[in-house]
Length: 81
Image 1 (cartoon, rainbow, N blue to C red):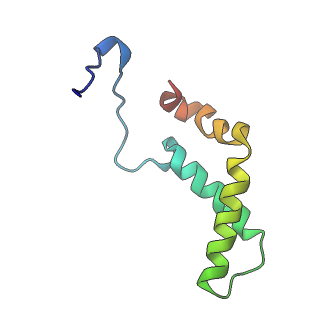
Image 2 (image 1 turned 45 degrees about the vertical axis):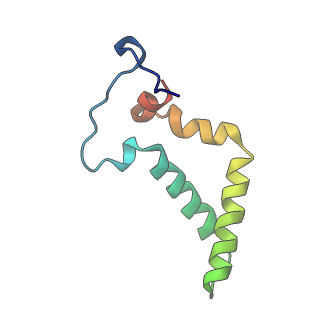
């Protein structure tokens, strides 16, 4: 199968500075994950930290409105278009 062509009226390019975590929805998820994990008991072993992170991500995943909020921020709305 061939690649689908995208017309210019359907796609817009956005300039992003080389370092701009406040404009990146992935970084907002990372911050949310860190905040969630910080509330848990300190992990003494890597497996405990892994379980905490997976639990936090599953919790976030079950809240689509929370994930949509990452894209609804004023500076990140470009990514939701």
